[in-house]
Amino acid sequence: DINNKNIDDELIICPSNLKVFQFLDQYRFKSNILPNIICLIGGRNSGKTSFIHLWKSSFEAEDVSNILSSELNNIVRYSKFYYFDNICKNKDQDFLFHLINIIKEKNSFLLFSSSKRLIDLNWTLGDLKSRIKNIHQLDIENPDDDLVKILLTKYFAKRQLKIDTKIIDYISSNVKRDFDNISYIANVIEEYNFKKNRKITIPFLKEILDI
Image (tube, rainbow, N blue to C red; front, top):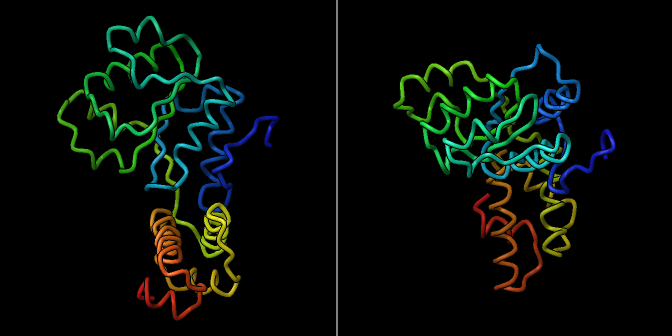
């Protein structure tokens, strides 16, 4: 619980995303020096949606992902908060161009997320390209060793798997530090454990994960 707001249960504040949290938390003060539009960049399972939920609950933000372009001017209100989770799923360039313009015109605030950097999304609308270049982007970094261990412990606990801390240490020392990869590994271990009903040991991990 931070600033009397309940953080999404899936969100872990840690060194890899602390700067993101601290930056978004500044919007409590609605300072004129803060950008009106922010894009959160991170891979799958990195916590982008959890940050969107935190933004929504902290600032009573409204979802604009399913709004028609023709309705934006009437729906977006002055100095209010909005969000659009994962623009890669619905990349309507005309809509985004109008949304960006209206958010700035009404001095409102928009947080949206993307799994790729905006410059890599192959925009074809020239006017939108120029707007995109000026959007403030926040990167969620890959997890460090400690966070990998926390994530693995959390994933296994949710799956009701009892894993020795030595096993957690071994996995964290031998896998790619990537949020999606950590989730994948937890799923693979659960699946093989269910099928073979074997105790999870280092030889077992070497067999199923090639590590």
